[in-house]
Length: 277
Image (cartoon, rainbow, N blue to C red; front, side, top):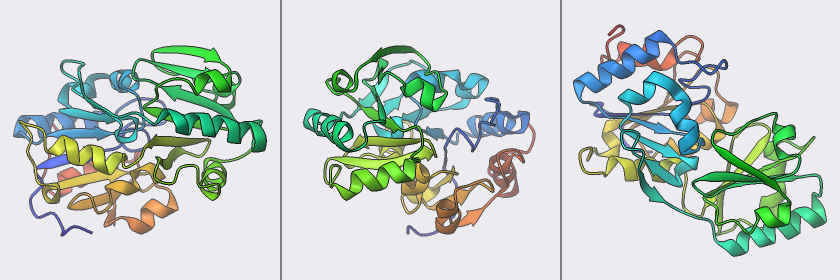
């Protein structure tokens, strides 16, 4: 783990369950903290499994965000211009192997792939997840979905959890050296390119011209398994009170839940951002 942050020069935060409440809104306190960071010249960086289109739906908060690390690190987005700062893709051979594995061993599993512009999902994927993606979406077969040049992949199942699916894929060694496995919600396993996760994406964002912040001078917030790469990648990692048990165990400290404005409260208490702005 990196040494404890002594001066916060950048703030990194997950979105869903961390600053975005279950109803899809950002509290007034969180908005005030974000504006205070912007006024003080402290970069606010989002680190999320959301696609760029999904990030654009976070509302007025986006005006205070310098960089959005999307798709668990695979895509970097400049919110002010809408331009991609980087994009990584999974190797095509992995998706073909994944399709064959699912057909043979977990035939009820459904797959979604994102290429940077739209989702291509197999029949039943949206219904199992009870989800509608931001932006364009095409419904097709698993085999056809696996022909897409993907930056992010999601796998879901009517009864298996994300942890179950992760164990199954890992046991077959399908992802070894080929993809990073994680999940932000219990119903969907996420795959990103090998060596790509929220930690790698955030560190790349911190190196960008105009930011240039040592990771040891950054603090991160998160609540889900896909936030674990931020632990050790930054000077300090703070878990939300509503976090997954593994995140609570790994964090440097714990703040309040998203419902209790845990991020805004921690920033105010640490003197990083004003409680009201």
